[in-house]
Image (cartoon, rainbow, N blue to C red; front, side, top):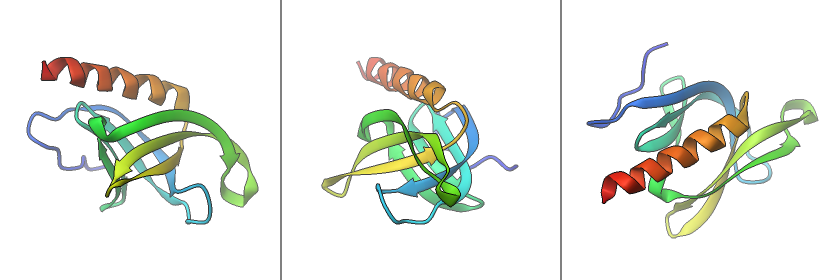
Length: 116
């Protein structure tokens, strides 16, 4: 798999294959890859950017068990973020969502320290 284009000084910290859904109900699942870098979190479906948020735009992280494909309930990473004057939530089904919460929080903390 080809690496996505990165910003200057950006490095990939974590990546995984997964499925993405925005909002709590109704939108279809999109299969692709989730990336965490030292600057942002984003989800790409082949070459289409589906979701992107800077680490400073993330408002909350959670692991929730909710419906996925064919009604199967799995643990998912929930990301609440600021976008266009409102708050939105994205859900990503992937392996080890708890590991992602820890890694994102660590990167958010490091980003705050780097700004000082």
